[in-house]
Image (cartoon, rainbow, N blue to C red; front, side, top):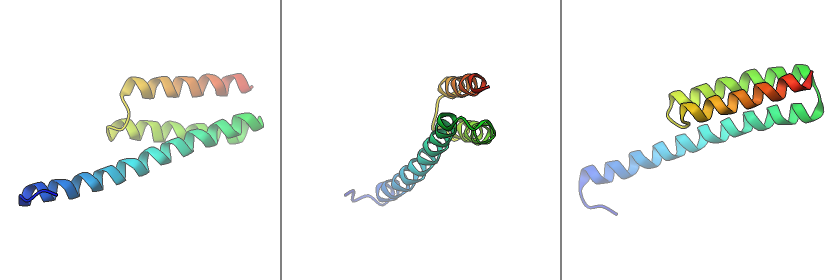
Length: 87
C-alpha cells in the first residue's frame, strides 16, 4: 500500500476504472453472445435486433477505449456476414 497521498488516490481511481471497464466488457460479450444464440436458433428477427444492439455496444467500447477500432470493425463485419448468411 502506498504512503503518499496522491498514490493512494491513484490506487482507488484505478480500481474504480478497472471495475467500470470490466462491467463494460462483460456487457459487450453478453450482447455478442445473444446475437450468436439468435443465429443458432435461426430466428432472423431476433438476430437482427441482437445485431443492432451488439454493433452499438462495440461502437461504444471503441469510444471508451476498451477496443481498438480495427478490432471493432472486424467484429462488426463478421457479425454482419453471419447475419446475411442466415437469410
